[in-house]
Image 1 (cartoon, rainbow, N blue to C red):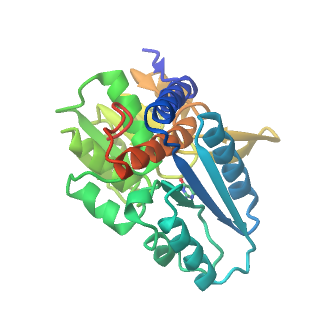
Image 2: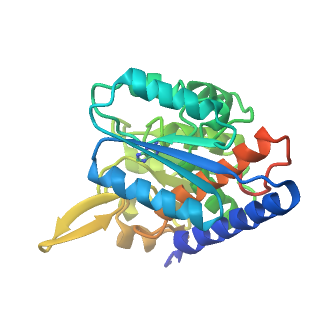
Length: 296
Ligand code: GUN
């Protein structure tokens, strides 16, 4: 079998177009413009690229983008003051503090100071608890993007066996909660799982989020399964820099029914879902109906 390639780039473009259409309707019918504030502390080169891309995408769909770039030596008190002022600003519907923060700043404290209703990353402890108890919350962007692609590919997910490899707070755990919410039978596996390949071979849906380049080969894949590769690993091969996932693409694609490539799979969905979450937060803040198909 050669797997169907799930085109995350095209899927993300479609999500952004849906968000853009909703944003245009909000302006016309309600005179409201969703706004996203992104806070970057310091000079981390990867973070700078992410923040630049987030700003460009936000503007492109017609939302307001508020960028706050602070020096690396910013004090915790000053950063908390900024977060509180964004919480109070009615033009701001979504707040994202880019991680990682410099070591002297307490990330948990900063994230938990964001108004949960504006926490478009879904990292605030209240949103984690709401998701875990099946209540309406803000959902982390990457798992939300994976869920959208899985729903699109399978229709209903109920009853499917899902194995999530990786137990991070940002991807693995919320991904498992979302799949459980869609009535999958969910296993969270990780680097210490015994006979990981056998566990993975039980999966109709296999989500790889371990952060180890090309770890899951075709031996880990049940014939016909859907493989979602969240990994983004920079490696060097034949003297060239290369981006690979947590899945060994060639061998897995020979067995799977469908697979997301790296790059061009899950990656583009993260920013698209950040915009979807900002739109959702704006609709909720204004007592308007949430956009269909763009939430969990
Ligand atoms: N750094 C890398 N990815 C992310 C993300 O999704 N959200 C935040 N806040 N920081 C990040």
